[in-house]
Length: 140
Image 1 (cartoon, rainbow, N blue to C red):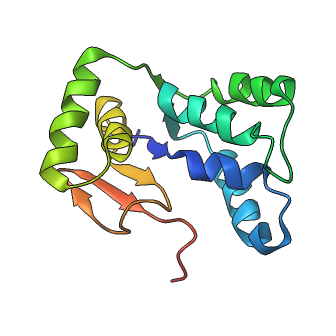
Image 2 (cartoon, one colour; image 1 turned 180 degrees about the vertical axis):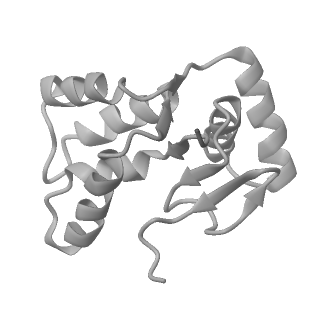
């Protein structure tokens, strides 16, 4: 069995998008989420809930809808927030010169044994000490 791929928040948000200019990304995100080799973190699920229910979002979900989706996403392995993850993210943030939040995603992926992070937010192809970022929306 291969290590799961870690899913960043933007993948989850594209999966619920109804925006015409995001239709292709939405289809790809939904396709990805049909897989069974994915992993998430509590941070990603929290970010998803907050952004999906944001009142200024044109296609905002109700808190009930967002909660139900988060519960559905719990079928994947989920890395909890821990003190050791936080301190590892502090170090990665400084080392790689990235935001704490991006570093926390990388460290959550590492904690779960993921070799790949699916994200539009980090540099495609960049290797962060064994965790490689892949932008699934990037044209080949």
